[in-house]
Structure formats: structure tokens, C-alpha cells
Length: 209
Image (cartoon, rainbow, N blue to C red; front, side, top):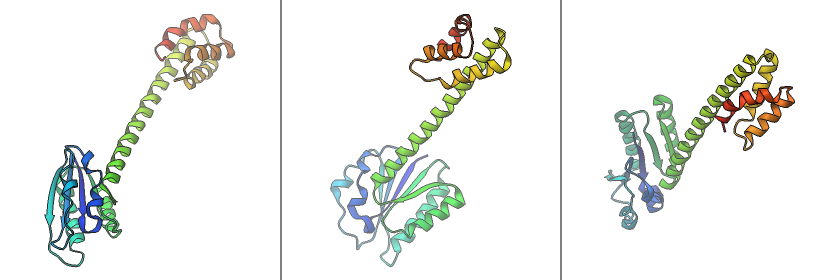
């Protein structure tokens, strides 16, 4: 698994490499250029974080760099696992069609950005979104577990099924509140339960504070 940046240097020049100094060991930079390219900015190339970098000179010619980047993207997709991510660094929107082809054909994660920084930010955002989704999923599981435990205590205490369900649902909605115990107590009393019921429930509720 890795993140691969394919840089159309003749299109973005040194500006497209901004952000490469923050890359890690799982990042790879391939800089495509021809003999007609402007002088490479060695100050940027000297600091590319922990990423591995490779210079790839291709023959001069109309759309030569475009065709070689497209071909190399296909090579990387064919040799890496499904978890790898690919970013073409270029202002040329013609790459978008190539990217869409590989995304639809092989279900890869790929995009076009004008700077490595933008691609790295997108990757960070995707990781955060994945973490947020996991947190939400875990929270939903805990809420359901709380509901079931409260329901069981109420039913054991002789509360009618319908009343027990509505009360357990009310407590479930309070999960995560700063005053969870106090608000749960109020919800129980409001639903017509006694302090004795709350005393029986408190050990369960305390596990979710």
C-alpha cells in the first residue's frame, strides 16, 4: 500500500512539488519531464520528506509526458494492491478522463491536483473521514448496548414492556451528555419510575459515563 504522485513537471514546474517535504515513507514521487523542461528546482528536490523520488525523462513530442504518465499509472495500478492511492500533479484537465477510466475499471483511489500539497491534504481528509465513520459506528454500537441493558433492568423490575422500551430509548438518546447520570435520572422519574428503579439502573448507567 502506498501513495503515488505522478508529476507533469513541464505543466506545473517547481510549484507543483510544494508540500513534498511533508511526505512519509509510504509516499512515492515520479517526476516526468523532457529535455525541453525548465531547470529543476533543486532546493525543492533536496527536501522531499521521507518519500522516495524518481526522475523519469521521456522523449520530447506533443503530449509525450501525458501519454507516459497515463501508461505509468496503468503500470502502477497493475502492480500494487487495491489500497494504494494515485495523484497526478498537473493543471491539464485531459488527465481527468484517464483517471476516470482507471477508477471505473479497477475501483482505485485516484485524483488530479495542481500541487502535491493538495493531494496530501485530500489523503489526510480521507483518513479523518474514515476515522469519523468508525467513531460513529462504535458509538451506535454502545448506544444499542446501553438500550438493551437498561431495557433488561426495567423489565426485570416489573416495568411494562412498552414503558420500558420508551424509557430505555430516552436514556439511549442521552448517551454522551456531560450530565448523563443526572439527565437519565430525570428521564426515568419523568417516565413515572421510582428512585428505587434508578438505584437499580445506576450501576449500568455508570459504565457509560
